[in-house]
Amino acid sequence: MSLKRENNYFNLVKERRSVRYYDPSITIPREEMEEILTEAALAPSSSNLQPWRFLVIDEKELKEKLHPIANNQNQVLQASAVIAVLGDMKWYEKGKEIYSQAYEAGLMTEDIKDRFIASSAMYHRLDDAKKKSIVDIDGGLVSMQLMLSAKARGYDTVPMGGFNAEKFKQEFNVPDQYETIMLIAIGKAANPGFPSVRLPLNEITFWNQII
Ligand SMILES: Cc1cc2nc3c(=O)[nH]c(=O)nc-3n(C[C@H](O)[C@H](O)[C@H](O)COP(=O)(O)O)c2cc1C
Image 1 (cartoon, rainbow, N blue to C red):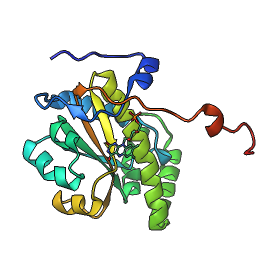
Image 2 (cartoon, protein in one colour):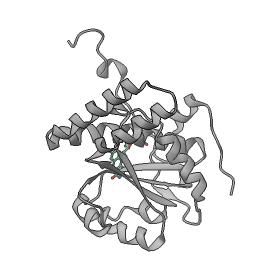
Image 3 (cartoon, rainbow, N blue to C red):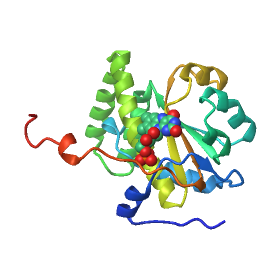
Image 4 (cartoon, rainbow, N blue to C red):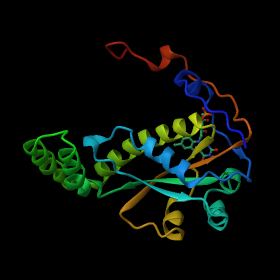
């Protein structure tokens, strides 16, 4: 198998497309998948609390089980894996672990660590809608970084919102603590993605004031 690697950011962002046809014979080695996920997790997050969790589904039977839950989308069966990007609705509970790690690494003083730990605990008072908004925003950032990292290694992806979230939770025993932000199919393209258009910049950008 030869995968074309691309490390030029400008080419990467221009060439990434949602790919819906994959070579089903391709397996992504576990170490490479771990590298992709590790790079994805370098994404920024609110207070660096990293609310994302990944469920990597790469077993054939499980992809078959997922297929009807994901609206029978072809890529679920053909892709090497489908990654469920989950948001941990109790993400702030890892504040102590994260800031202690930063302190041990010499990245913050003990005083700052303690203040960050105290402020991370505040998130728990937010209502569920606000909590969900935070995990969705951070989950979007990690997902985009995952897709670009995959592309840099010669793999393609498609993000998917077309699935039954409730059924997914039930069938894949996802604890209530986690929300499913999106599914991302990943593998080696069998057919390229369709070209797509973008709104012109002047329709999506305001300078200094919204007119
Ligand atoms: C949150 C989200 C959900 C999406 N859901 C699906 C989906 O369920 N099935 C699918 O084929 N494409 C899905 N897409 C892909 C979009 O259709 C695609 O990104 C868009 O048409 C632009 O094309 P491009 O990704 O090739 O640039 C989704 C994209 C996003 C960001």
